[in-house]
Length: 69
Image (cartoon, rainbow, N blue to C red):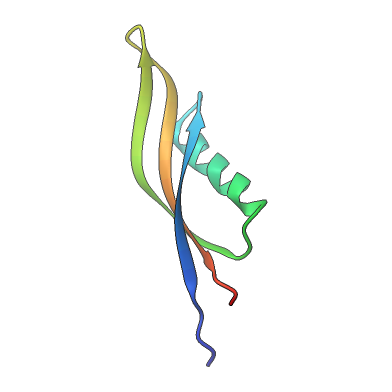
């Protein structure tokens, strides 16, 4: 059985709609540039607030992808 290696990076996605939309958007955008994405783990959620109202959602996501040496 061949060994596999994975790299993990952290990215932040934003959305005016929801945390789920922010996380999904960053994964879809990352998939355009990274091969063999394997796991996406949401590590932190927060919101931007203006005048007492939530104006955007942010999701910090750790992504792992297969490392090709």
